[in-house]
Length: 302
Image (cartoon, rainbow, N blue to C red; front, side, top):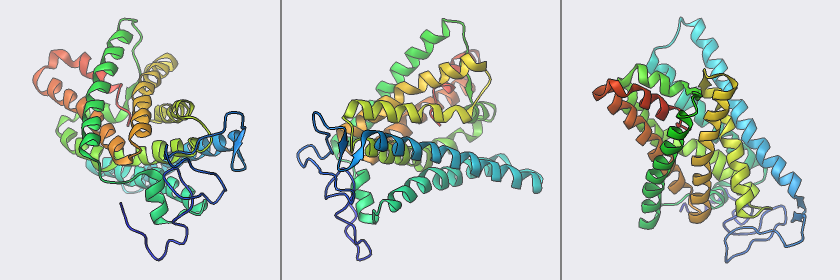
């Protein structure tokens, strides 16, 4: 973990991993989480409604920020005559996600009075243990197996889920898939988990038990991907979002269990990378399995 700095006057404030937050909430040292009382409707002066509203609000704001950043890039692209595929991906993944998701999350935590060290503690940013690495890898594989099974079940209904636009681009340009896999570890996993698990779920845990906090955070995370979907109509979009809820719940469970943002970011990146690798193998070596590749693409939470 990062050590204290002289500029962090609030290192003992805020969060779910230690210290006393500025809003007066109390922390259960044994559970390392803030737990509501059996009959309380609020914790430390913040009502449950306020906690949920602020958590959901910062998640939605992050998505809106991403849309705004993407719009700006699109307008600039038109002015300069268009970007190459590589530049477009770099702008949308690297700049878009870091500015929108990480930027929004950091701004919210800073508004709550958190300094650098306190943010690291609150989010649980630390080097994973061997057990944490095993959980990340095993969780990614298990999530892939179950999600692919669910996708196969959905396929029998005859309703085609909406496709992830990024995955569709990858299917049309398989040569860029290795670069996108790298981006999963450097950008998508860290940025999306920073906002939706690190900030949103941690904020919810200040007033809610684990189960509803995980469910609500997942309910914000999965629909946020509607901006990345295309085709399939309303039913196809609904199915695609539904398929994304499951991995989101698993990410939330792993974050709750480990309390380590790095572990869940790694799990997220590994899960996405498994799906992208499947796309690459199918496209490169098994064109007859293209429908299977398309089904896997719908599961990508990017």
